[in-house]
Image (cartoon, rainbow, N blue to C red; front, side, top):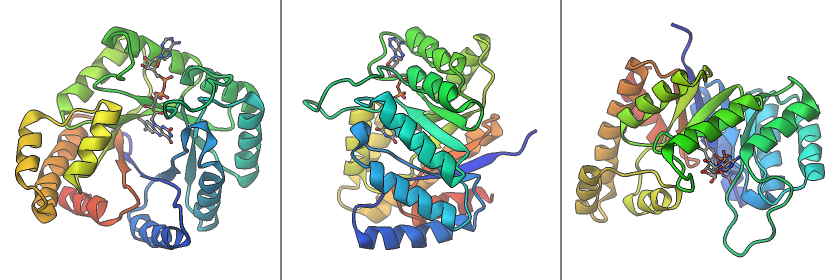
Length: 276
Ligand code: FAD
């Protein structure tokens, strides 16, 4: 079996305190020797400078950094400039996404779907970057059908993607089914499950409603029952998510990508439970 790869995702902080806090979080998570830290990018370029700055800091600390780039409402010229910046910094991995525009914001720009961004990065920079793309075991909410979504995922591979990170999910079967379907279509790249620790139920419910990730009914009922008791939410979340991770790794997942939400403790607790 090849080495399992672990990675941690951050969002670019808004405030000087957030920057300082994230540096401390990074230090704690770096002790786990992840393959890379990735940093999200606000669709339409809303976090562009902060994403670049956070990537610069991670790189300066000597870790592998992977910026996300989303292409919705972007122009080729702007993406090209960002690629130049990252190449000059010595970045070798990019997470290429379409992104979602807040309703009412701007035009569609020069890219419609992520496969076009992947093709553009390849056209501009050849094989310099390892390109990660997004995958959806429970299917993307805007997809016409599950089948269409997998075929659209395949377009990203045809455009030159090297591997994928999934949207989070709490049902391991959806992941295994998705991977099987991809393999049947000749998609051979690693598909790394995205893991969302459970910290606050209201926040998780909001994210899940927005991105189409399902919180299974039994989990939702239990989490709702805890009300404001976050300690119980987190203890239950730790049990459920650690079991999910165990199942995924035992079933052949090539690694795990943690949505840390810029906090170290929830990811560290899962890590410890897994005995990694
Ligand atoms: P696409 O692959 O383009 O797919 C979007 C939808 O269009 C799907 O329904 C697909 O089936 C359909 N589709 C694709 N191609 C075609 C086609 N040619 N014709 C018709 N339909 C098509 N968002 C951010 O803004 N910033 C981030 O940093 C960020 N990071 C993320 C990281 C991960 C690991 C994941 C899973 C998601 C992330 N997102 C981020 C969210 C992501 O931008 C949204 O989920 C977005 O709605 C879809 O992006 P995508 O790259 O999957 O799009």
